[in-house]
Image 1: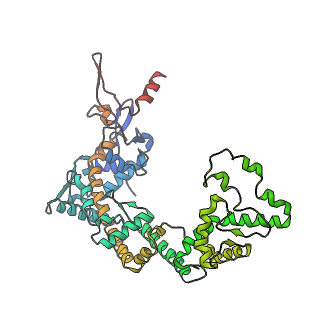
Image 2 (image 1 turned 60 degrees about the horizontal axis):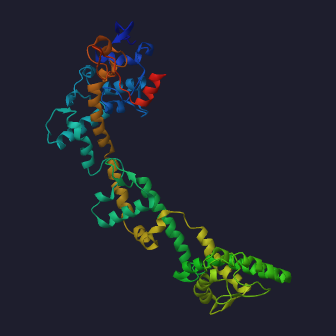
Image 3 (image 1 turned 135 degrees about the horizontal axis):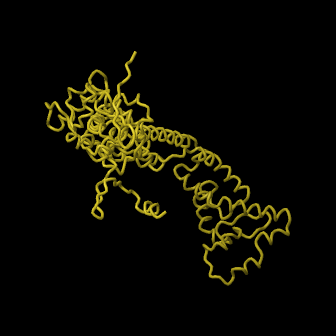
Length: 450
């Protein structure tokens, strides 16, 4: 049966507060009824206390330290020290021999501390300090791999592989490296190669079917010319069919004289929207669509592009296009249009199929996978480097925090300033000790006036 911890209390501020003197007191706080705690939370900013330490304790990063987070920090630090009484000393250094190496995390922290000391030119040092950790960020940044699984193009000496990484970044975005540089992680790389393979497969389907790429490499441009006038030509032949159905429809379907009068006084050009809204040519029953003369000037250039890039290559030299011939062209482009609807929606298209196949045909994917794997392999070591700093901070700061959180020992005894006190206000020959930092002056002024 576990013996309950024996607590000592002191009376201050009109109530009893727990007295924290030893490492055992700190470790036993999890057993102390939180009704006896003076505070159950505090902000991470606006205190006379190291904000970086508070950020580490603030596990959910909500800007506030809660009682459960203080307990978790004490348990973590206490579990890594051979003697929990070290926590009450407030020292900013630790002997490596004081770190408990009976567990895997302790061993990793000691190994990382030695690695950092070696990096600082102190391979035989037996003590690691906060001063040694001042450049821990630079230490991590200087590592060839830093454990975040992000590969930055600028760290790659091989020009070809670097170009591939840059192409991946351009198509799929980037992830931030620990050093702040933009790079590629596993998710981005895997998506890029999957998208590239899908796009290459889709392209191969078109290249292997003459019905799809009916004009070879010119099919894309021809399809653009076809689609630029497709709806307008279909509109024209539908009007002609209506005129064949009822001859009275021919004149109004070609637009009335009144329609022309609406813009007769305007300065017109072939690009005028008013002109573009008119039919391609005058509507008559059974009439073919002229391709060079007697056509709406707003559409003349597009019809000429259709004639040169589509009609002549597929139907031969023609000055006009009949309804059956138009239906034939629509049928010829149907496989291409169906193929286009299957095109993967991906950013890799911007690279062009030649570059995509060059990347897929090389060894870059294997090289990138290897680099990411090697980077992730040192993740534990890098995290341990951060843990070294965390343990040093907790060793230095947790006792002071507890005496300004669980109890207000500093404030009520006057032994030291409380962490929420930001100075002394001298006014009218008097001094005011309870001064706190005001983060938002405007809000405070409004509150003071109310």
